[in-house]
Image (cartoon, rainbow, N blue to C red; front, side, top):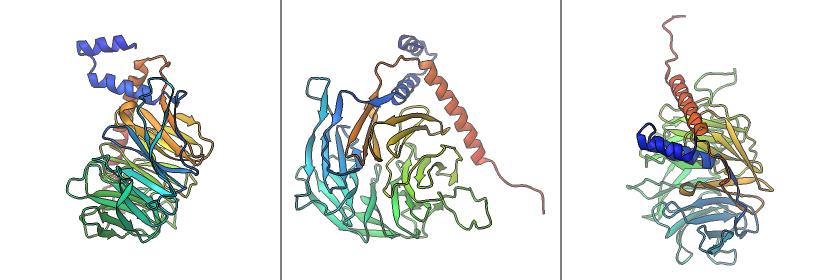
Length: 404
């Protein structure tokens, strides 16, 4: 179905305008290819561990590397030519007296203002940076090496940063007071991944080396709300004695935009989709996704397309899956070594990925692809059918009136 035909159907009311938006977003994100005209200036002398794109202007990319440096890249093209390199406009180098001493494992923009960003490092320090001066406005010393940290994008009643460290306790630090708010105790080993809910400012998910994935309400004094179980409570072997989300370290977490589902990946080479409200495994089969990295893996979930997609780093590739059916749509190959992180520039339908080859790559939609919107609307219908099927399976009552 050509664009003009689709627009005509929107005009006469037979197709909703949002359907065209979703179909075009889906087409773009399913046709990503390595950009031939744009690249990102290589500024790290070692692996790129974490990247983040601010959501105010979607203009600046923040990156942290194993060499201890932090860089800010300008993504918009003001050169007047199609060929463009995203230059480093700010950098905290190893020579700076404010720099981290060891590898920077996690970076994130302050969600409401590009004047602040945060970084966590193996030197056990979490720093809140003033973007204009490139000096720390606040420094928090953690009880262990920092693997990951997260700021809530919807918080209005708190300014807490959740920090995952080599310690089994999750630490919450308050930017307003400059001190530790409280700790969350429930894991038995190092916490590798952490993520705030995008819709509820008090809900927090954490993944650990103890193979467990926990959901917390930070207002509760009773511990975690839920421990996700990959078997949904069914004992699969005589030795089954606890609720584990993976048979290995839970190394990556990402909520869907509506906060209803949570995606996790682990060193057992599995990706799982969890129903947050029910606390159950949706049993979507993504197949084998190789992940033996000891680092936190940063995945990306789309917001505007149907079906929703998840981008998962796997060895030297980025795998593109349907979040609903687990179908592998695409494999993005371009890095020369392990891929550690990826981030979506949502309004532009672009993907950025960083890896051990010190590169940050740009993946853009293929503009030469022949457009057939019927294919994408058909894919969306399959997604809706699969969603309905999985929802019904999750909500069925597994009980019987028969007495033993």
